[in-house]
Amino acid sequence: MLPRSSIFRLRRPSLLRGVLLPLAALAASLRLAGFPDTDHLHASNWQILTVPFACWGMVETARCLSRKWSLYHAGVLILLYSELMILALVLFFWLFPLLYPL
Image (cartoon, one colour):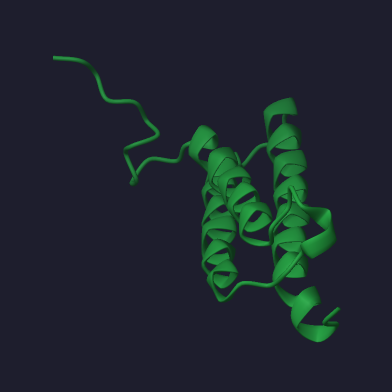
């Protein structure tokens, strides 16, 4: 029997799961906005579904913080800041075409 990876154990904190969820949300949001064709960027109602996945990834990363300060703790904080930027991008790709139509 093969051991299960910690990425599939939802009760245990997983830094890999915390990083992959926002990256997948960003990729899906870019694709739903019509990214490869930059002349015809548009908003999709389905883009709102990527926001909870980006937030879930931030929560998963925050669960990996340790109580004592260390370099690992600093690295997790840097990941949290980058995931905050991903969340801002996902919200931007969803809201900007709705507020300012071309």
